[in-house]
Amino acid sequence: MTEMLFRTDAYARKAQGRVTALTDEGGIILDASLFYPTSGGQPGDSGKLRWGNHEIDIATTQKGDGDKIILIPAEPAGLPPVGQAVTQVLNWDRRFRHMRVHTALHLLSVVIPQPVSGGAITAVKGRLDFDMPDAPGDKAALEADLNRLIACDMAITEEWISEDALDAQPSLVKTMSVQPPRGAGKIRLVRIGVGAETADLQPCGGTHVAKTSEIGKVRLGKIEKKGRQNRRVYLHLE
Image 1 (spheres, rainbow, N blue to C red):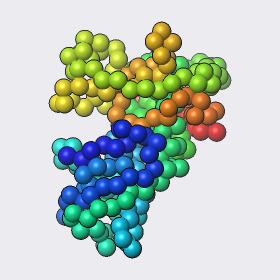
Image 2: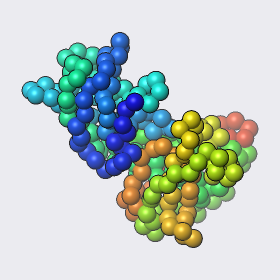
Image 3: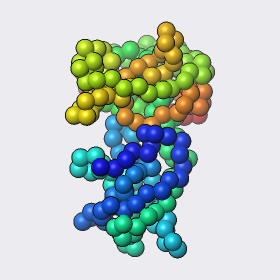
Image 4: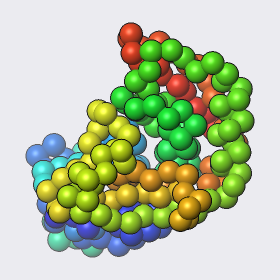
C-alpha cells in the first residue's frame, strides 16, 4: 500500500519517501507518494526524485495493483535501490493547473445540470461529455454563470460517507462512466461551498484548489456533437 500524501495536502510540493519496490518495467513504488496517479480524467503528476548526489525525472504516475502507486521515470536507468530514502519534488505548476481545471469542471457540471458521460483534464483546458441530445442554447450565458460561481470564492472541502450512504443518495454521482472506487467501506466527497450555500457535492478522488477564486477566469470553447445523445463541452483557463 502507498500512502497518498496528495490526499492529505494537495498543496505540498516536496516530501520524503522510501522505495519499497521496483517494477519489471522500471517503475518506482514508494511507501508514500506526493504524486497523483492518472485516474478520473486527471493526468498523473510529474517531477523529480532526489537522493544523495542522484536525481531522476518522473514523467508520469500510474496506479498499480491494489493501493500501490507507480512513479514512471523518464528514463528507466539509474533508479534508486529498494530501501533508499528519497526526496520527491513535484512539478507544481503543472499540478496546480490540473487542480484549477478539475475544480472548474465540477462547476461546469453545475451550470450544465446534465449527467456526465466522460471527461478529461490537461494543464490548459478540460472537457466534460454530457448526456444530452441538444447543445446548450446560450454559451455566453453559461460562461458568465460559471465565472460568477468562480468569483464567489467558495471553499472546497472533503468529507467521507459510507458506501451504503452513497447508495441511498444516487443523485450525488454525476458521472456515468466513472464510478467511485469501492471496497474500502467509505467514499470521498468533494464539496464546493458551505452548508446551504453548497454549489456542488459529488464523489471524487482528484486534487482541487482550496477556494474557487484560485481557478481564475475561464472561457468555454467548442461544444461538439459526439453521438446522438452526447455533447462535449470544452473549458479553457484564461
